[in-house]
Amino acid sequence: MLPTQYANIGETKKRFKKLNKSHNEIYKDMTFAEQQLQFNLQGNLMKLVPTLFAAFIYKIQNQKGE
Image 1 (cartoon, rainbow, N blue to C red):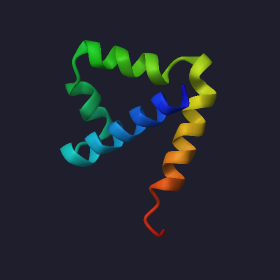
Image 2 (cartoon, one colour):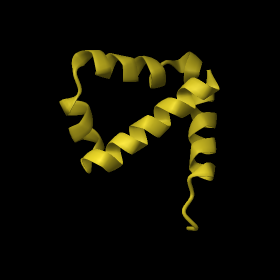
Image 3 (cartoon, rainbow, N blue to C red):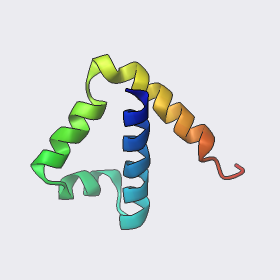
Image 4 (cartoon, rainbow, N blue to C red):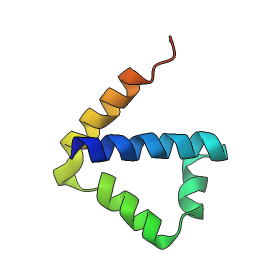
């Protein structure tokens, strides 16, 4: 489950950079199916721990010398 969450977080971050829009604008422009997919991947309490670990690992691996 962790690789799936990590890939989802990475693609979401790339989409934010590519479109240069806010979080709310991107979700507003998504189709209903995309919104449901995001909700199911990130909004499920059973997937909370893998999502947190994936976000932590993504943040560590993608630091830019801050």
